[in-house]
Image (cartoon, rainbow, N blue to C red; front, side, top):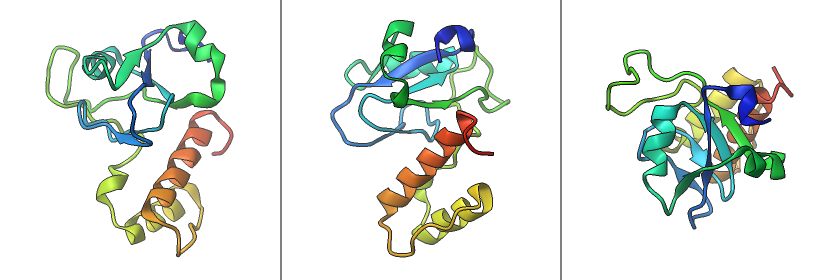
Length: 143
């Protein structure tokens, strides 16, 4: 997927050192893994890319190098936040999974993805599975 497919979205890559990073800058609720790229509205992309050692806006060639690193394509932000406002935008793609209990995450997976997560899974593993399911849905692999 190139940026041409998402004319008004910018590809943002996670270049930080942590094995997983929750967006605490633009408050999108997105969870990032090393090298992962999410397509974001310009206002959100600019906020994130201001933290230069964690996120970077990349070009189409970088996006096309490794399609497996493409994460969610975020097309909506909170309707109360306009391009000219500076409050923290939130997306509708995923809730704040980090702030949920394991039981809540399990229930979310069942109700939104019709998937039962293993009862003995660690919270991080459960979140990773939901992110994978959301990415698959965004890519059109599941409904």
